[in-house]
Image (cartoon, rainbow, N blue to C red; front, side, top):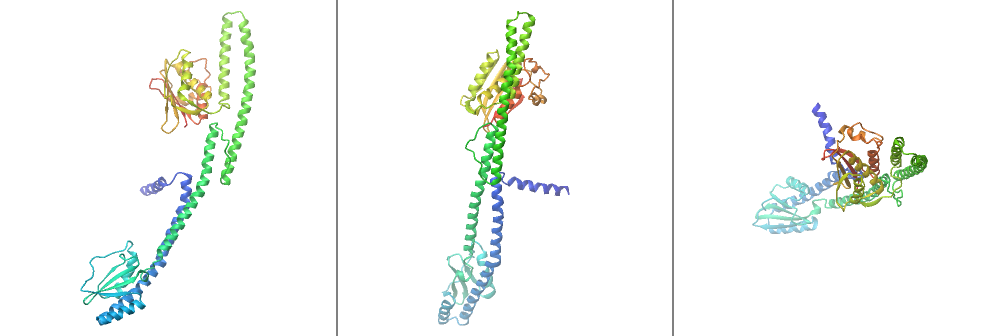
Length: 449
């Protein structure tokens, strides 16, 4: 019983593996498979109910004429009788009869490509003729060669094929095949047109998700596809309005927060320097840094345009900034490697990851390479203490500050990795963490092609 159940589950899986995965392929299969099954059924019904019946009747009629002529000759096997029979057969039966003196029947059987074509005639001759015979329906395109053993040689009877077979059956098959091909072409054109609208919608949706504008996009295709496209455009406009409102609000918040900070910095600059003033300056500097990180996280990518930039140049610029703080940063990237990105946003993400690696390790290595599936992969390695694998995802949570050795940077607020992942996902990619070959942490930025 269990084996039967496993087999029942196994066959659908095998069939599903051979089915097309694309919408175009499945739609085509939905149309073509029923049509093909219908055509096979119609062809089978035609041959079974019509063609074979007509062919059998024609073969029996021809076999009856052949048997009558052979019987008439055997009753009086003389040249005069043969001439009389041949003349009558040619006039009334469309048969050509001649005696091949001194010759026997050919050796070997010559079957048609499809034996069903001449099997009906063989069956009819077997029933009507008592004498041995030989049949060839392949040598001549329009005739059947029948030879019957007779005294002194063999009677050769040449009969038109349309007397033995329903010769117009192939015309029906040609029309059926032509109609099937025409229907398939029309189906391909219509389905391709509908699928192209869905593919275009998917491309634009992906571009919208990465912040790339598609000004030439207009909803087209079936009504449902146009509705989905209109909904996508409306959603994109709502999101854009939300981003614009948030940017305006953040600009006001930034101004409101920086104004008192500026006054405090001015008052501390004018105050008499002592230990308390220095401590207050440090607190003020940390507060300003925290506000900058909050605003950078909340602002996201803003309205920056997408540009094609050289990845090595971007990495080199970020690495030089980290090196000026005393970090030992090595760069390994192909100068020809490029990607369509928002330069400032990606630079912010790289800076966060590189500075995070520089703070917790003595040596940092930044490398970039092309991905086999398309796109770019940027790897930031360090030789620091690293993070436990079970805490990788926790490290990406905003304001998360793990209690491990990597998180003793008192100046940070736990937004560096969150900002980096937000930027990467905004480009259609992602940021992941792993164990570095250098012994510390590896951060990987993956960007689509």
